[in-house]
Length: 136
Image 1 (cartoon, rainbow, N blue to C red):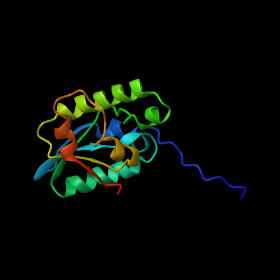
Image 2 (spheres, rainbow, N blue to C red; image 1 turned 90 degrees about the vertical axis):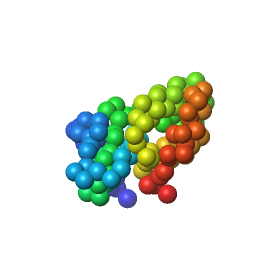
Image 3 (cartoon, helix red, strand yellow; image 1 turned 60 degrees about the horizontal axis):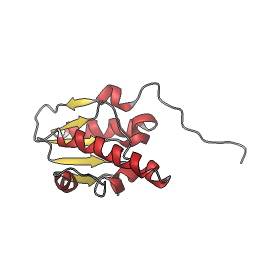
Image 4 (cartoon, rainbow, N blue to C red; image 1 turned 135 degrees about the horizontal axis):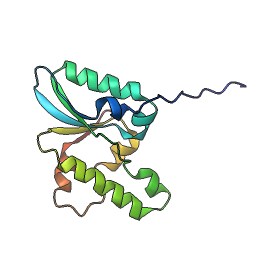
C-alpha cells in the first residue's frame, strides 16, 4: 500500500462555469441545485453531469454563483454561531428564488443540513418542503 489515491483539484470551481440560471431549451420546470463544497471544489464533474442531465430533460437549474457551506462542518466542531450564520446565508439565497419547484443536492452533509438548518426566518418551512436529495 505505497500508493495514495488523491484526486487532483480542478483549476476552477464548479460554480464559476454554472453559477446563476442555466436555462433549458424546452423548460418544463426550474430547480435550485445546491452543489455543496465537495462538488464545488473537488468533484466538479459530478455537478456538471447533474446540471447537464437536468437541462437535457427540460429542467432549468439555478446554481449559487458562490457556494456557501451548509454549516455541518462548523456544527461538528461546536461552532453553532457559525453554523447558524451559514444556514441563514443559504436560506437567504433559497428564499430569493421563488420560481424553483425543488432544491436538490448531491452533497450528503447538505442533504442532512437542508431540512434541519436552524433559521429564524418565517419561510424556512418552504425551503424544507422543496428539498430533495440526489445522494440517498
